[in-house]
Image: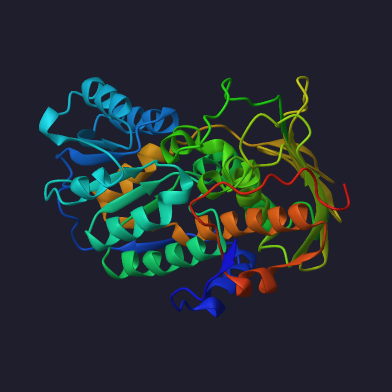
Length: 402
């Protein structure tokens, strides 16, 4: 790991997110556009699909199923994945691009209105910057970055996107789920009183690739198995757990100010350099203390739980509130793909880059505490501006306190 100065961003604006959320905002803003190219009420939105793995195909299908979108170009690092997507979505073979720089050819296509950006997270900041520079609307999966340097790039490009009237959605789908939306509104209105404590669990069974890495390790193999490598996935706490952090920050009304805890590698020892468990304690302004347990170790697991306790009641995800008036349950519904399409059709453009960066950086804060076994402070970690290099790191068996 190295520290880099990176390009200048308005850090004060990033830290203002807490105040925005406290006012009931969900760290997303709406930009009103007078007209959006290629997205008239009766026209098909033409998508370029960059990163044709499993998650990406799920997102692409989600957009196609709205009946208002068409995949017109695909790109992937690997030929087999690119061609499979080209056949699946009936894309002209001349618009199927392969290799490390294939994504640039998709962005060069003038008739592409929007991008589905689902490459490994380590590539996401530069691909997002490129898409905004090319004038494309962007749906990008979480996490938006794997390090602080990447979060800075996303924040800066997000501001450019707003100035260019481009819609940006991050695949943190809970923010477009009616249960979460309705429950957050009630919490913000005081349904559980002042939040004082929280608890979150995100546990699943073991994850293995099933094959040993070659010797010497190649970049192609790392990209194919990107989840296992820190510089590509950000560790599972960033790639997967960012969903939890997005919800917690939203409901609590800001981001944590510090974190302490530990983590380690107990069963994930075949290859890669990421952990398989974290046990953390976050402190939010208030103070609000939140315990966080996450792992990919146990076969029989609790799964996902998010709970917040206030002076008048408690919240349980996705949409249950228990308070003085009894128990309340939100109605399900909502679809992030339809919301993105609606934003383009209506011109009420979404601006979710900041939300994505804050969620990713919360995961980075927890990862830093888990790796070092020392307290990690938000402003100090942000100032350090860590950037992960394109290489495997020596595996950390466990943090010093484990």
